[in-house]
Length: 170
Image (cartoon, rainbow, N blue to C red; front, side):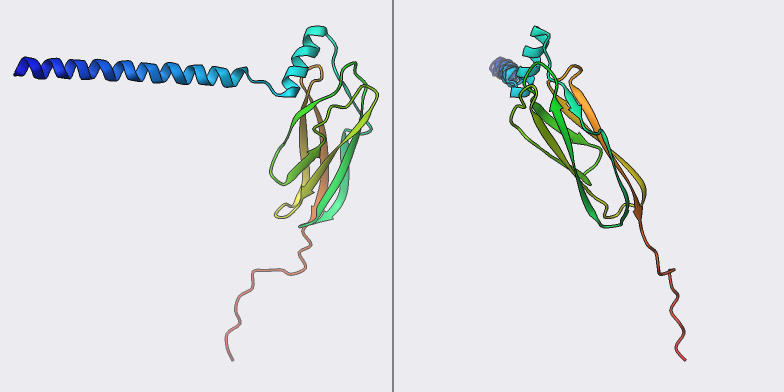
């Protein structure tokens, strides 16, 4: 009886280890298959790197100063660019330094010599003082990224001094 119990225990342990190893192997195969899938921009960047031809941004301006704005204002600026490279320019992603800055951009390739734009919106709610925000653009350009930035001075206009103490009742 004890031998049967030990044999059953050993077999159960063996099968559980084999099953865990199969799950690990399966998940590794799944994750490597996911890694093999490429975005259009990644494929374009690899093709450009292999052929030594890249797209290139030529911005009208790389920094925009909104000047002095009031706290709570939402401001927008369009960064216009020309693709001065030899390959169609594909923007794969744009990252900002915080959620107060949101970009909009074309997902379509911009042919060499053609123009495009990146619209950047900034929400100044809860911000004060001098603000500088970078916008990193991921594209099939040499080096893989380019950058534009915005800045402003946020006026908090504190007409009321505080905090106030309650006045005693007379």
